[in-house]
Amino acid sequence: MKVNLSAWDAILQASFIVQLTLLVLVGLSIFCWGVAFLKFRQFKDLRTSNDHFLTMFWKATSLDALYEDFDMFRKSSLARVFKSGYLEMQKLAGQNKNQGNQLQLSGSDNVERQLRKAMDLEVSLMESKLTLLATTGSTGPFIGLFGTVWGIMTSFHKIGQTGSASLAVVAPGISEALVATAIGLAAAIPAVVLYNHFVAQIRLQEIALNNFSSDFLNIIKRNFFRE
Image (cartoon, rainbow, N blue to C red; front, side, top):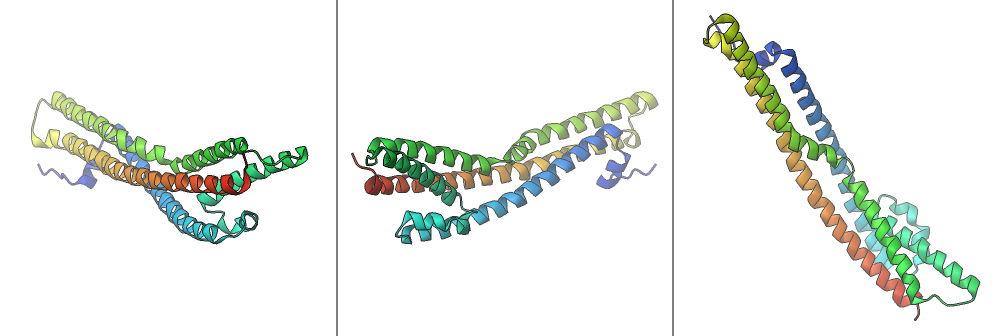
């Protein structure tokens, strides 16, 4: 008896449970690549817009003028952090003006806290959707293993039904089991690689945010706050 052991035939002849398992894995893989595409574009836009904003920031002669041009840098995480700190500084300036006093150096703590909150928000935005990559990378092999176990169980069940352990009896179940393992790994390995890549990108962006925040805070302390 001829036995067709091609992967496609194994999928078509697989039990419903194994086919459902493979469908879940393929779905997760598609979603992961969709997330990867969005993240690649997000980080590309961030790098471009942040470079542009930094150039303008160090050339600017007035923070007020830079703030007025904020719409030019809406895609920049650094610009959004700057806006948050600038608005907090303006709020403090308004309060002290009403009181007839100069800005006090202790008030810079409020700006520092606002900058930290803005940076945390930016990191959170960069981390969004990465959970799917992490989940697929960690669970993909086990989901595939579930299909593997089910395929082997199917082979043993057929052996029990037919009383024969010939290749024609066990090959379909073993074949679908191996396909489940392969697809599980095919979904998990790229997800892990992509997740690690984006985590590295986030760390780089986080360093850039921290550096900018420190520079911005030093500038406003020197020029706008007095002891």
